[in-house]
Length: 120
View 1 (cartoon, rainbow, N blue to C red):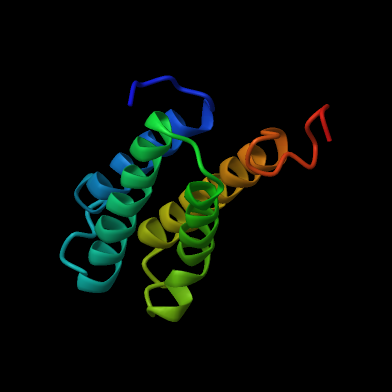
View 2 (cartoon, rainbow, N blue to C red):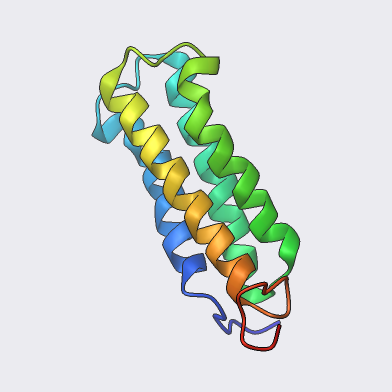
């Protein structure tokens, strides 16, 4: 396996995943267990999927990011931390960006979906 980055979205998702790991401390909500662990765990999963996708591209990696992004968008309400403004906004925005990037890669890469690709 060699590192040949096919999608620019994968390094962007790696950065978002790493940000989500650091966000509880950067935005000072590390004392709140649910948003902190949500951010760290989902950040690790996003970063791992992005790293794997940078080596080998499969549709499941993007669909994993769709699920993780969607979870981030709804998790402040499902986990009960929507009242923590910094955590809620950060989580929702990061989730929305991950969702958009994953759908973008799926829509434009003819090898993993490509409903917007010229070859389709």
